[in-house]
Length: 499
Image (cartoon, rainbow, N blue to C red; front, side):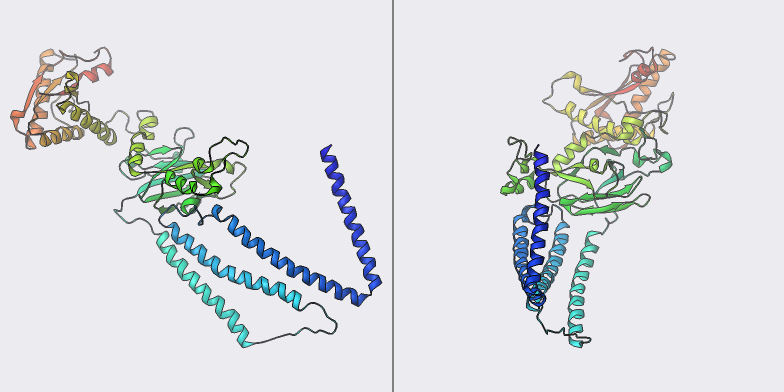
């Protein structure tokens, strides 16, 4: 019923307007043609002048009212180191264009009023005037030079790539309909290579080449987490159509082009929480974040940085939004420790793994760090737990059937060596163990020789032999069943005991 009343009201309004127009035409005919034209010119020119005043009043009101919602003004100052240069360029451009905008529109509406129709008035044509041409060519050219030079300086600073050896966090953003894949470089600080021919939906979305060891510690994240004050280099590419990597609060915007990698380097300067505290100072951001729920948290508290696609890339374009969190360097390092390599969690020892069954540097480094933590705990004089004093060196490797240490063992041995150098009173017992395959006497001898090899390595690196005891137990102290290959592998081990 309400819709019908609204529709009838609109129809009635049109009928009234048509009737008013007809009455106006009849009145003009009665007044006479020339008087009608003069009256029309006066009313139109006066109306334009009034419109000019209202127009500029609305323009000024709109600028003041919405200032705190506009990027670059109020609380929405840039949250990146380079953003100030971009905001400065916008302000400078706005300064000149607003001057021209105001002058041109005042002249436009004033001339419409001043030179309205009068009988006998003729138009003055100026076919050529050197002075006028010099003014309207020279002034814009001078302004353009200022804008172009300042823009070029800003461009060269903003778009400079990282230098060789410069510390930066390397991230790759790959776009496709309708998602972002955010890949971080691992501890090596380098992103591994990709090949589109290696793409396998569900297992290798990016086409990472697992033969490139730089890929082995890379990890993916559902959100973009960045540390405050650290330089970030984002490599940007698309897998299907044109997309755009847009971080509005950081003044970062770069096309993601299929087959043509682009990049952007920037440094965040405000954490998410710091930006929220800035918003909190403005009444506009103290209103409920959900207009339909008065009890919803205020806008400042619900605020988050975001990654958006700034290209209309299809019907699902809206779903490409990703959360961006800027945290302190300490929080970022803590977050890093929770991230797992995609290769190690999803590819390792599968049919797609070119290193299946072989020890890898990335795993050895990880195990070495675990050993360092465990050894520190074992050395702590406050720790009285006997079980913590004996450590299993499960990343010590020997040549098959011999006591010759392999190169892969150096990661763990370096941890033991560092502990002995840092703690001059530390003494250790190194013991060797085997599985039950083969002759017991031979296994006993092999276990003794392997323990002696570990001591020899440490002694050759400056550790006194008196600080290291060795023993071999052969197959007499298994820690798992010898009925399976997995169990036998655990029983073939080197242990270190803090004395």
